[in-house]
Length: 194
Ligand code: IMP
Ligand code: MG
Image (tube, rainbow, N blue to C red; front, side, top):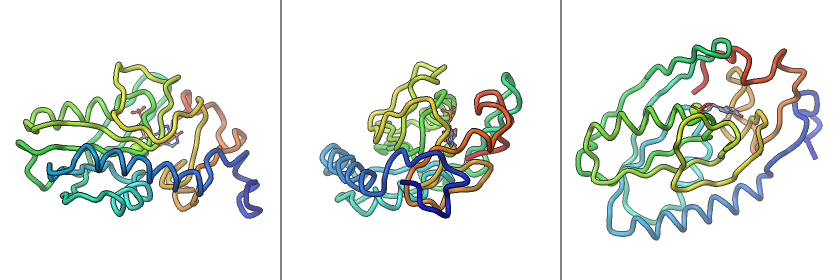
């Protein structure tokens, strides 16, 4: 059930708060198990990871360091889509066990580009964790090591994810009504999203 105040904007709730909570706890257990004794460097992508990251981090029962990378994807038409780095890392990557955290793996271009940038800094190991995975839209041969939910090809918002910078504050993941964008997301200029 979509809460009344969001009914004009959302078609449905795809993933509820309770489902997110349960799954994030499972992911955190798996990551904790894999990173015991390794003091990982968690590198989160701004801004869409904000809620996922906060919930995941407080359940990771290992010492770690946290840093952020800012990436904006400018979607202009169907062809040109440029990735621009808006914030760079502060912490040393060389030799560290790095875990990249992003909100959603869609075409794979963002994760591929960020991975390549970090590889150059010679981490000891490099893994990736995403809350959502839309495999139907993949154009790059990349998969994440830890995936919260595999979802169909729908444009989703909430729990950090935005449409034109809106809806990040929803506590659940919802499906935006298609009337709210003129053409399907893969065809449109969504503006910079991070
Ligand atoms: P990719 O580079 O195509 O894999 O896209 C990854 C980025 O696009 C994510 O970090 C999001 O910022 C954005 N994105 C992709 N799909 C969605 C969606 O359904 N809702 C909101 N943002 C999305
Ligand atoms: Mg993003």
